[in-house]
Length: 281
Image 1 (tube, rainbow, N blue to C red):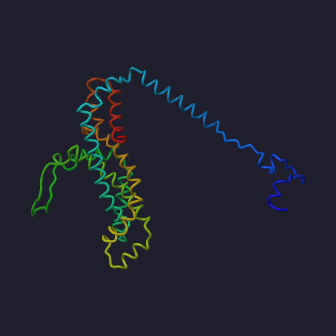
Image 2 (image 1 turned 135 degrees about the vertical axis):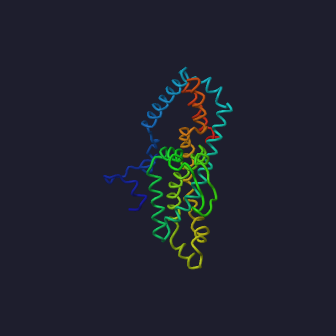
Image 3 (image 1 turned 90 degrees about the vertical axis):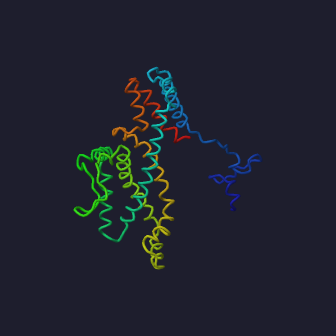
């Protein structure tokens, strides 16, 4: 029996062919797959979304006219600029330090590897808000700062309060903390490069800094960029913590207004919209 004949014979061995359906599968009806659960779930979520939007729009306590009036006010835009500026500066500092710490982490020198591991453990293991407050109150531990060799010469001497301003506190506190996370991201990207690449570079006589910059890092960049983008978005939101040290970022600018008007919700609403605006535009 050929393959074509096998389609014409039923399980009982009888030939069920007819002039209209010479093959058994020709008489089958193709029915599209239905997903009723998906449509029900979509309808439920759409209904919940409509109810939520309706409750927000129709609720007078949100004070949407106030939100629209102050959304583009100079003080809010100034706070938004500070937030964006801090994000860029902190991420640049974190990337530069992260490369150095990751290189130390992968170094053959156990002392460098131990120091970088301790740095990562400390800054990732302590709350970033506590680190900000500590840097802001560093003058309580060291009122005066002196650079030089004692009893020989002094390069700089001054008050710690003059150095630790809200801006330097934000950059140091958030930058050093973010550098610990970026170091692990960069280390993971560098570890993804095949070890044979490093061995070949060393066989050609390249020093560690040369093969790191010309061989390892260029190949690790595609693995580093995606998580770095997530860190940038996270840092854009984490900068709101600098409001506790009286730095006039977006949140602090909103707080300075609603502390006088006592309209907390609308000012917090356009602070949120100010963070959304640079991400969607």
